[in-house]
Image 1: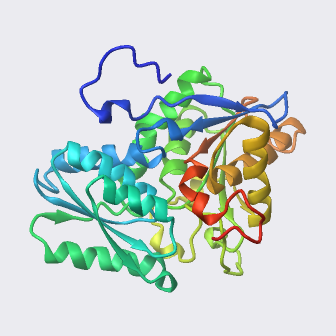
Image 2 (image 1 turned 90 degrees about the vertical axis):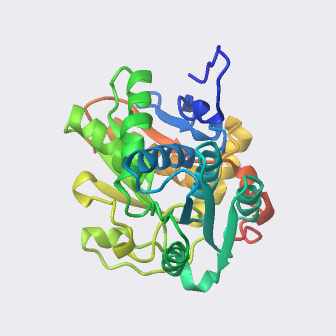
Length: 326
């Protein structure tokens, strides 16, 4: 994987084929493996959907070359789309709530995109509405809308999941991944469930997020520092299919902060908060498979390390928990 031995014509050809690496703090009998998405050119899992969605939308005629892509995003999707947009002859505008990573917003601008900020207190719902308003004001503009576009999940069904499948010779017992839009987990889960209906699928969210409402539970909504996963309004998350999920695990910020530090100090993994949440949940699932509490078809658990902690250094991810800014 990531062994490109021939010259490539475009940065888009470097997206995908990321390494799958053992998480050492997982049971020997049921190892956890993480897909290291920081190896993508835009350094996150969202490069996959940026390339896939724009190529398919151009093919379908949803937008023409020279047109504009307008997307509400917390940052990584913007970077992924921006990487692809210029290479495909498109302009990009991103609507980003102010509280999200300054580093991400700087990178989007560096990649030639325009960034429009919205008030943090208005949430992602307001950013979504504002993106559609901007698109309506432009000629030949489209909103890919990662929260509802099936191409989001399709990108992972066609790339991420087959790569995992090949690396582990099809012996995947459980898929564990954080849900923001839900695209990564849904695409990967559908792929493995088609191959073995007994594959365990577990969603991950921060404490204070509302995904467990999909299971009919009452949830105490609250602020959380973990970025890139979770929701406060499940009506916006159209890709998530609760029928594909066996459980939704909630991870508190304090545990995420501790795991970010552990992954860096012990495993050399400079990954951000969503990856740490995924690691915590995946290790829990692995222990339950080992102990017989989860009946999985194979003794391996896979998860996603979505992006790098370097994107969040200004927020103090490696300082004390109290100094970490969500």
